[in-house]
Image 1 (cartoon, helix red, strand yellow):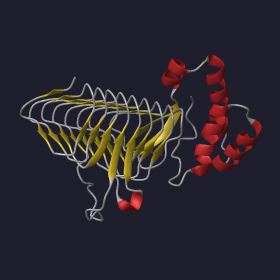
Image 2 (spheres, rainbow, N blue to C red; image 1 turned 90 degrees about the vertical axis):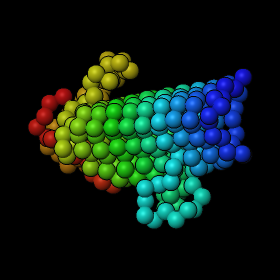
Image 3 (cartoon, one colour; image 1 turned 60 degrees about the vertical axis):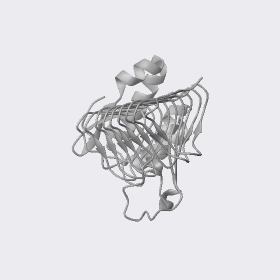
Image 4 (cartoon, one colour; image 1 turned 60 degrees about the horizontal axis):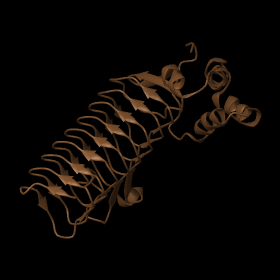
Length: 262
């Protein structure tokens, strides 16, 4: 059963699934699609061709799907796709894609997007990520799965952040941050493995394998690409291969300190 407040503005053509709740003074555009169990709380706005997946909650005064903040955008048809079980907290601002980026911004499942977060056009976000308050992702940023980005952190356009990465609060990310690593600072550099995050998710032998790979890549003094190529051939660990492939495919480079321990 749907629960829709009488002050909500829902344009004709909007698709509203079973069990959806729409609060007071909200706006839902004619092209929006809300899957079953979605909650749109007081004052939130859903614009444009936006799909919101099952059981996602959009909190008070968030603005989702309004046109990109890109001077190259001239009204072309673009989309925002948001998966299941996300929490989009107060005053967050999420844009759809642009023609130059494929026309789609995509957010996966089970993400916690805290207050005042901005996710710009053409971002691709995986699953189970946490973006703390006032994180700002510029256009074309890619974030994998299970990453954590600390509050007040801006991320430069086209940057990629790998699986299980951790970025400290009030950092400024201008280059790619590999999976399983912890980075911080302005500009952010890789400081170590994300040991706390790894311990919460992986067995000790897997972590030990990643520690050995990290030392070879970042602490040996050898060229990073050369070490990544060798480890990719020699290692049987899927996680090490994921780390090495990320390094080999970087376009913005990997910032790191050679003399820091894990």
